[in-house]
Image 1 (tube, rainbow, N blue to C red):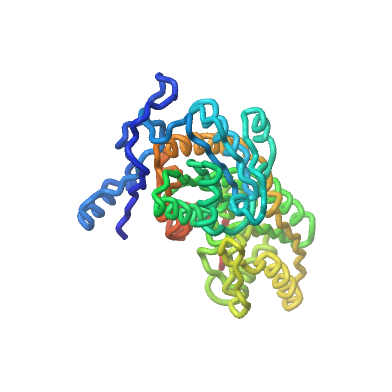
Image 2: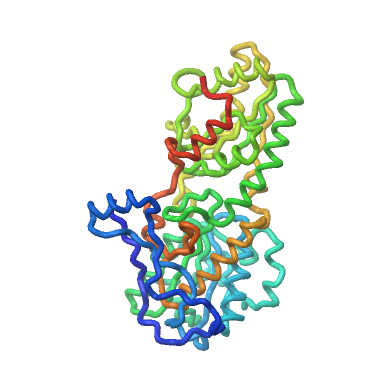
Length: 430
C-alpha cells in the first residue's frame, strides 16, 4: 500500500516564535522514517519510488499564527480515558505561558459545545483553573459521543474568533476533526485543527502508542490479582476478567503480560471455539482445572463476536459497532458446560471497564500526555491542520488524520507481542 504522510499547511511561516531563544528548534523539513528496517525501506522504494517519512512534531523557529491574535479552543470527545485532564492542562499552559496566547477556551461536552442548539458556554481556561486538574480522572470539560455538523461547527469557530482547535479523542473524534478542517479550508479560513490521539484501546494507525493505554493496563493488575485470588479460593474456580478492546486486543494482551496469573487471553484478532474445533477453550479449561483447580481468563470486549452473528448490530453516536457482552456470555456458557459435564466450575466475574477508564493517568503515561500536548501546540502554531500528533520510533510525529483513521491498528497473531502472550499463558488451547 502506498503511504502519504503529507501534512496540510495553512500558509508560510513568517512570524518569529515567541519561545525562549535557547529552545532547540526543529528544522522545517525534519522527518522520521516510517520503516525502521532498511530492507523494508528498500523494498518500498523499489515499488513506489519514494521512502515514507513522517514530518516531525516539535517547536519551529518561524510560526504561522500570530500569538497575540490567536484564540484557541480545546475539546474532549468520545469515551473517558486516563490523562484527559493532563492534556488539557498542558495545552493550556503551553499556549498561555509559552506562546502567550491571550484566550484559551475549553469547549464543554465535545462537539456539542460548538453547536448553538445546546447553548453551552465556553470555559475561559487559565493556568489557575487547570493547576490541579491532572489529579482528577475523567475530563473537566465533559465529553460526548458523536461528531456534529461541520458547517455549523466552523460557523461557531468563526463567531468565537477561534483559529486553533484541539480535538482530543479517538477515531470518531478525529474523523469529525477531519471534516471540520476540510470545511474550514474550503472556506479559505486560516483555522488549524489538530487532533490528540486518545484511546485506551491503543488502536489508532501509524502511531506506536496513545495516551491512556499504559494507565489502563496498570489498572488491570490488581483486578487480575483479585480474580486469581477468588479463583484459588473456590473449588475449580475461574476468574473471568472482561476488559476493553472493541476491535483490538492490546489491553488484554498487555494486561496478561503485566500480571502473569492469566492462563487464557482472548482477543478479537484470534478466533476461538467453545467446546469443539480449533482453539477450543472449554476442553483446555477443563484440563487446566483438573490439573491445578483454578484458572484466570482475560477477554477483550471485541473477542468472540462471531457467537452473536444472528443478533442485530447497532452503532453508537460515534459510528462504532456496539458489541455484545462476551464476558457475560462466557460466564453463562461456562456454567452450562459445568452442568453438561457434571464437573463443578465456579466462575468469579469481573468487569472493571469504567473503573479502568476513569482513573487519573499514571507515571510515564502522565508524562506522555504532557509531551503530546506540547507538540500539538507547536504544530498548530506553525499552521498545520487536519493533522493528529503521533509517536513513532521514540519521536513525536505529524500524521494526516485521513491516514490515522484509514483503518484500525491490530495485534498481529504472527508477531512478537502475541507470541509473548502465548508463551506466558502456558495453559494453551488443546
